[in-house]
Amino acid sequence: MAENGDRPDRARRRLLQATVCSTLAASLLPPALRAAPAGCTPWASWTSFVARHIDGSGRVIDFANVDQRSTSEGQSYALFFALVNNDPELFERLLSWTRRNLCGDAPEQRLPAWLWGHAGDGQWRVLDQNSASDADLWIAYALIEAGRLWQRPAYANAGLQLLHLVRKQEVAELPGLGPMLLPGRQGFTGAGRWLLNPSYLPLQLLRRFAEVDPNGPWPEIATSAARLLRESATAGFAPDWIGWDGNAFVIDPAKGKLGSYDAIRVYLWAGMLDAKDPLRAGLLAKLSGPLRRLEAQGRFAEKIDSTDGVGTGQPPAGFAAALLPYLSALRQPALLQAQRQLIPEATQPAAAQLPYYERMLVLFGQGWLEHRYRFSADGRLTPGWRSNACSART
Image 1 (tube, helix red, strand yellow):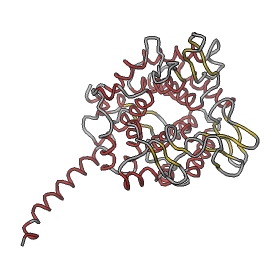
Image 2 (cartoon, rainbow, N blue to C red; image 1 turned 90 degrees about the vertical axis):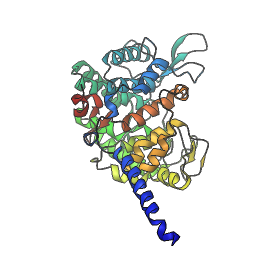
Image 3 (cartoon, rainbow, N blue to C red; image 1 turned 180 degrees about the horizontal axis):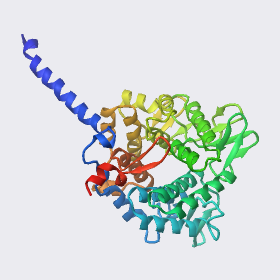
Image 4 (cartoon, rainbow, N blue to C red; image 1 turned 180 degrees about the vertical axis):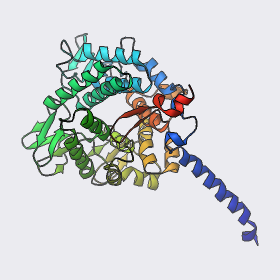
């Protein structure tokens, strides 16, 4: 009798669970099917980042290092988010500082140096002249899309000029693989061995470059990159670094098999791929490690052995944010919500204490989930301020 008497309560619980899951699933819907998207509202996380990490000259500062460094990566991401937030004045300041300080006297002829900061001799200057190809791609992308969205051809032309430099100095023909983006201008090739970084290859950007630079190697690099991402994730987890020996992807003896602060971006970029991208489904299937780990253990890890999935260390809040698009793409609303709860609200003191890199991951992951931006199948950027939903509210 007690079992029969519990049936209405169990039915109500099941209805409540279904309602909760439906509500969470609704957050995964495209903007056209959601009312009042967050992308139409002021972006507190970005405002807080600008106040803390970008000075009046347009320099992005990483305070976690004693040299109070600025990197081409930081400048590139900030340019992207200034565009996402429709702030051309900040965009121009960021670009001017980058050109003046990272490119030297000939910004149209030199790739940005990756590292600038307080040198041991007391001077503020470039600390390493080598380039970082992922930053170069993001700068080129931000310029090309700013030129299109803001109707400023000079930006688009500058982006194409930068792509030309990338093609000349950072792309190599790898035997057995084809054209591939090297991590930088120098230092990543050896005797029959090349060192690659999977997180430096967002397929969205390569899709866009194939459209605007049709004579470039970008479709072939996208194919090679997808192969790299699939074959290097032998246990479903991306490594930070991977080697290519002319026949196969191999663990680099110096970098090892760790997947951590670089690799977390692999899941982020994959999750943000448009559903129509033909590489998306296969890529997500190969990158199954984070999903399996969250299902089994309920938490990710700061460091993961990419060959067996064994993890150590408390994952930072930025990792949770980076996994949001990935879990959205895999239709995992409950796991997505659990990761969301690990990210401090922008107005909380804990959010202000996050270091530069974690805050960037939050901007990427949470901003995407809030529909502040999207990438189309051909790589075009669709910022929230250009959406029909936002236009209807202004």
